[in-house]
Image (cartoon, rainbow, N blue to C red; front, top):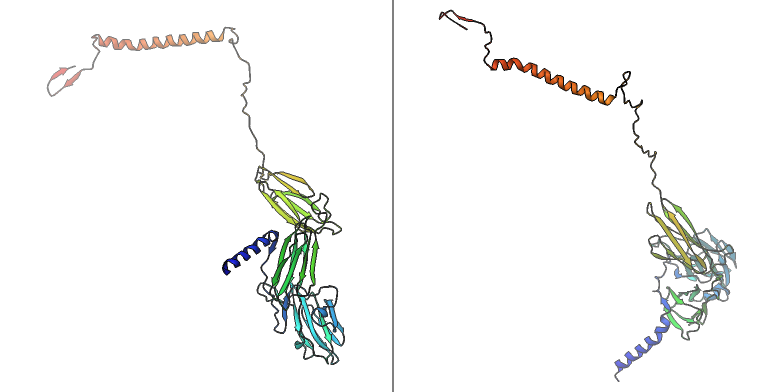
Length: 416
């Protein structure tokens, strides 16, 4: 067997072994490192302390120093060191009996670390957290800070920022966040019940987020820094997940209707005692018949609007785990015309009086007398016509009419 063939077989074996676990794990590309905005400082993602047990100075490699600030968001002093915070910038001053070995300033999603080499002249001013914004041109408000004061007679060691992280989750997945410090981070993610741990490497100064699927058979996910064996975080899926009485969710729905927006749907997932911790996915059937999945995180409300056509009836149906399927119907009729429509019904005209069938006074029948009158008129018209034609007929038979005489003087002839 050739060396190349052997390498291919080994690679194939690794892939086959990784597939079952990888099917439930989604890896994110490491995010770009944060921008410090100050040449004196080095920026790191995430948070180095934030109330965790133990000394923050020990995390940075100064176990014998006195901690100042301790996640304070105001001003503080101690061990002959005074730190003034105006909300955005820190000013640090100290006496000759002490020295400042390191200051960490947290704001936004990252923190700046100022080493001992920065604190050579008292006071030192203008310390701030990493830049934020699309162009990294804004200085955020300081959320908290801490510092370490040491013995001026001792040379401070080099500041070493450890790997930090956390594990959070819902009923469906665990989210592992890894923040690499001074060196590259090698983290082991162990979903309980799989029998196989997955290793993740994150470049120094970067952050990576890994989603791991969880279920009833594999409820716990733990992340451990391999270099120090420190546990970065762990998450265990709630036993109430998947039951009809989920204690970690509270899905509710309400509706509104309006001519402008149609049917409004208000989806909520919160309890008055703030015990909701998991997401709820609502299934919404729109008036058009489409299906939408809307996820509402714990202690949140989401609103959606679905239009309804004029002179039509729209129906929205909402369903979710632990929620009875609820529907809302809305018949939209929002077009109005001023005035009143009037329809006129034609009526048969009425004639005042009575129908007369006999002539007054004489009592003769009206119809017969009318017919007799018409006949007499016709006879009279015929007679009149005949009387006018008789003279014309006589002239046509040779009767000579009387004509005036005419005299012609020039010829001496008389004529008629």
